[in-house]
Picture 1 (cartoon, one colour):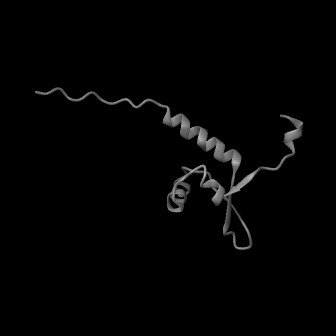
Picture 2 (spheres, helix red, strand yellow; picture 1 turned 60 degrees about the vertical axis):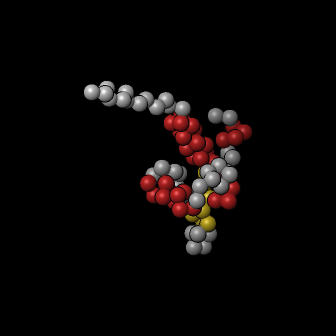
Picture 3 (spheres, helix red, strand yellow; picture 1 turned 90 degrees about the vertical axis):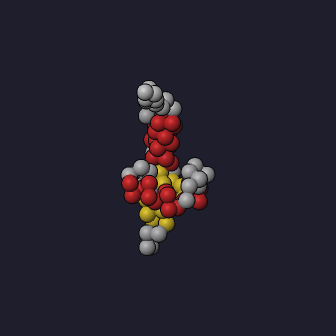
Length: 82
């Protein structure tokens, strides 16, 4: 590891900033989180209402989504007509 970046804290982004990465509704986003299909946010604030995501986890998620999107889809051949 690079000693100059080793001590840097994890960068976080808010839901407002997250919208530029994932242009989906809040309902969809939180459904993905409940299903385990999206990184879990870190809750902050007195009542835990503010949510922030780790940029490193979002980058990993985005990389996985791109990998899945590039997998070719194979279709079964159509059944032969009788």
